[in-house]
Amino acid sequence: MDRFAISATPPTPLQTSTAHGQHWLSSKCQKRGGGRPAVLTHDEILDCTTKFPARLSELADVIAGPYNEGPFPLVHVDYGHNNIIVDAGYNMLGVIDWEYAIATPCGMVEFPLAVSALPVAVDAPWNYNPDGSAKAADGIAQHKDREGYLQVVRDAESELGIPPKLSEVLRNEKVRDVTAAMKLFSVDGKPGFFSRVLDAFDGAEDG
Image 1 (spheres, helix red, strand yellow):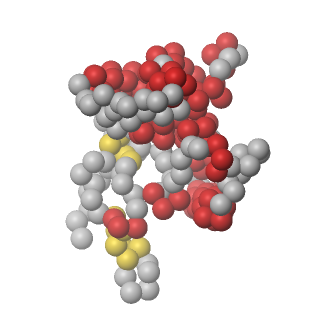
Image 2 (cartoon, helix red, strand yellow):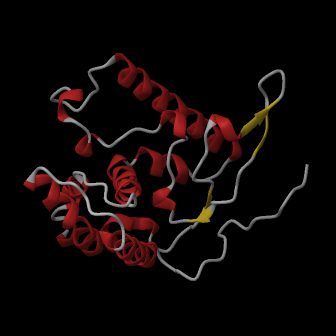
């Protein structure tokens, strides 16, 4: 199996997380402008969709937080079971399908696809209890799996003697929700309650 040396911070022309966010906004807004029109049936959905780029731009540096200057890790973006090679004993041998891998702000690192989930703020409200916990059994199980994965990451960081940056990012639900909303917004013409994930940052720019 071939091996490739990758630096801790892959080279990128965008030096900060804020710059990355601004570049993403520019490219995605242009793309949506030329895509198929969204079919909107509710004023609130339209409002949340159309205001998302401007609000995200205003809060970009706040969302980046302590990781605005990096690191910028290499992220697979399609890290699921289908791209993991294991042996007969289920020992991991490698990860394939790196064609869309990118150097991205640390705050945009996500959970593996198997335990990823829609942000509560953009999902159907009837799927959750008043405290934000999932009602359905599969949602409850998924939350448990995410916590289990997070503990594995913490244990690995401790064993390797490295700073707990990855576990900190994965534990930051507000930033993870923004990343998920950005992905959903990238689908041409797809409306949604994207701006709601930014409500958690309101007032933070003044603090």
